[in-house]
Image 1 (cartoon, rainbow, N blue to C red):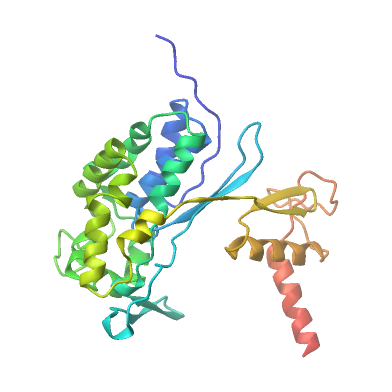
Image 2 (cartoon, one colour):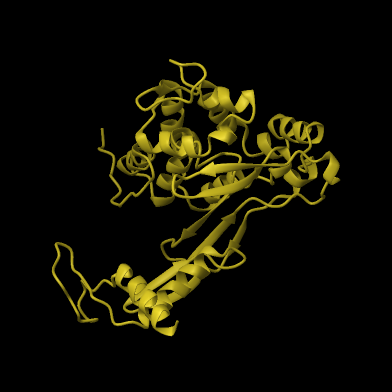
Length: 316
C-alpha cells in the first residue's frame, strides 16, 4: 500500500478538538481548504457558544495559481420585518466580570444563516476530499462527546441568560451531574443529534437546510414564535465571493476582509497607525531589532497603544 502524503501546514484554532480535526485532514493528504472545513464543522461541536451551523462567517483564501478572494457567507437580515408587537425580541445582560453588555435575543433576532452555504461553496471550488470525510472529525467528536474545558465553561457562564432562555437551549448545555446547572469543567457533553445531522447533510446536501425539512422547521418556528425569517429568505440566500482588502504593512502584504464587513477595515486602519510610529521591536526570545529590513522585525502593538495614550494626554 502507498503511504498517504501528509500536507504541511500550520493550524490555529479556539479548541484542541478543532485544531485536531484540521491536523487529521492534513495528515490524510487534504489541502488547506479541506482542513478549514473540518475545523469549521468541529468547532460547532466543541465550541457551540462561538460557532454554529446556524450562523455565518468569512473565509479569506489564497488558492494556488489563482487570485486571492474572500468567501462571504455571513448571516443576512430577513427581507421582511414583522410588526413590533408580534416580534419576540428582548434584552439580556451578559456579565463579563469587569464589564457587561446588553444583547437582544429571541426568535426575532434570528437572521438568515449562511454557514452551510459557505461550506458547500468552498467545498465545490477548493477542496480535494469528499465532504463526508471532512465531517468525520465532527461526527466522531459529537458521538463520543467533548470534555468541557475552562474557557468553554467561562464563556457559557457569561452568556448564561441566553443558554437558559428556553428549555430546549438549556438542555443542550446542562450538566449531567447537576440538572439545574450548566455543564461543568471536565464533564463530557455528547451531541448525538448533531452527529446525525452531519450524516444527513453530507448525504442530502445544502438543500436539506435551505429547501428541505430542516429549513422548513426553522421558518415554521419563526413564523409561530415571533421571528422574521421566512422560507424565501433561505431560498434566496447566496454566498458571495469578494476581492480582499489589501494593505501593505512594512514588508508584509496583508489580505483581509473587505466591506461591507468592518473587521478588515479596522485591521487596515490599525496597521496604518502602527506604521506611522517608531516602535520598540522584539525578536522571538526577547532580542531586539530596530531595523525594518530585518526579517525578525515585528512592531510592538502595546507600545503603539501606549504611545497613542500619551499623545492623547498631551493633547488634553
